Amino acid sequence: MIITCPNCNKQFKIDSSLIPDEGRDLQCGSCNHIWFYNVQEKNNEALELKQEIVSKDIETKAENKEDKIEESQQPEEIIKTEINNKKKQKNTTSLKKTENKGGKFFSYIIVFIISFAALIIFLDTIKTPLINVFPGLEIILFNLFETLQDIKLFIIDLI
Image (cartoon, rainbow, N blue to C red; front, top):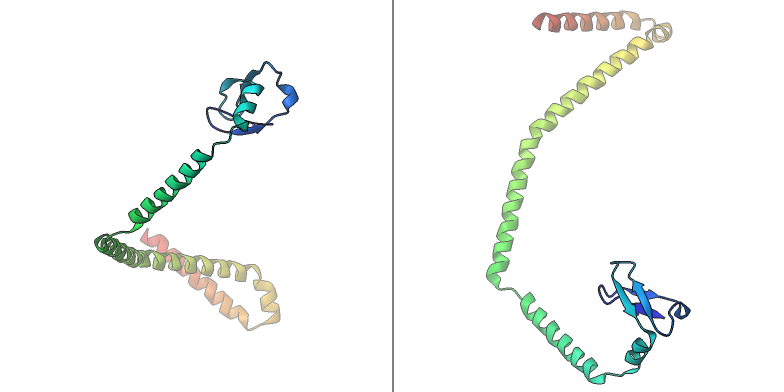
């Protein structure tokens, strides 16, 4: 049998053998509301047929839908103000994009410097095998490392 909590209207499927004829207290598993449930009272209510209530409910639902349709129709002025607000939002986002270009340029420079340093470390690591394969590369790598050493000393002198 299906029992509905009178407090939160949650429905539960309960075995009818768990409820005696004289009834018993039940507790809702959702809201913890406790109420007395009698099987005979609920069975009598379920057998009553209320056709008038059903037809009135249908009429009120139809009226509510018509009211909602009328409320959803907005005047042109409200729509125009919404369009203007959207345009203003687009203008502010375009200003934010121009402000971030400087930050993006700075981050590109940082990525370039880090990548260049990683390349130098990689070349230093495999310097000996490269010189064995390409003997003329020894002078170029030596000059590169000396130039980087001079740049490092120049930066230290500035600080």
